[in-house]
Image (cartoon, rainbow, N blue to C red; front, side, top):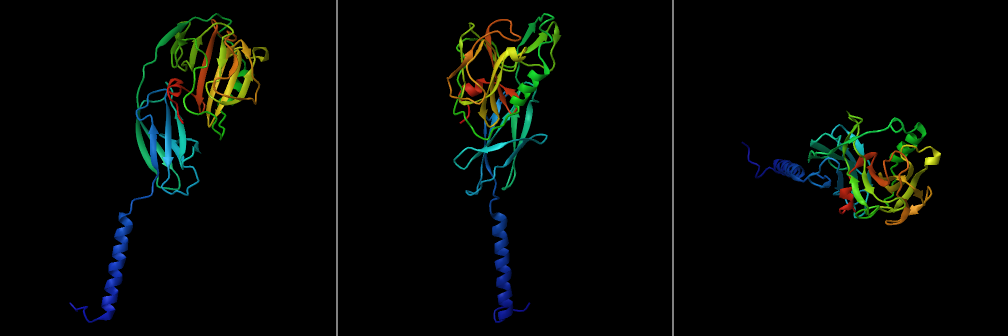
Length: 296
């Protein structure tokens, strides 16, 4: 083999090859730029809201990543300050328990994370409806409520944990399954929490927001009765039904703890109580975790 000691051409070529090899090793060994992801809660159960917080490695990143779950269902992501983005993923008693794959996709390398969604047993009730109660509701009422549940506002009005909207005892918990007139309702679960209280007992806003729905019995809300819907922002919504009185108008801004109406028994209600439903991207979730600390 020819010596390179006195051959300037070969010496220069060897240095270039060595430099290229060194650069390749450095490139391959450099950590890939990918989002830091924080999931809360780490061991969710059916009915929980899953918070997915993505923190880009690039401090100048301004484009929110996309967040998808399992079959590709995508949930909107919003900036929440501190160079962080967040998506809220709702689950319900109808969600499939087990391994749930969450993907964070954006300007940095995709993160794939697996979360175990725990199963949960929900109690059952047997309800007997009179013929006049079994077919309550009309299309206009259903359409207005459906449109409300589809609201996803970019601004966030809530802060921290939510408050009970009424001090009455809880008469029906979230997620209860029911038999109606002896027939099990396959597509039903109790979408909210019922608070038993006297007619006229004040109903307060569980968190700050904007009144996005006011429906009255006199306007055809025969199933829900007098109804208030609050947009808390970023796909988080509260609905209060069966009210005896409504003290707000659509478009009003309300603060946490503000009186917005009163308990009643309007619509399909067996007695005076407040039904509070909490929706995240159109799915009714368990309000309890939102009361016990919630999400910032």
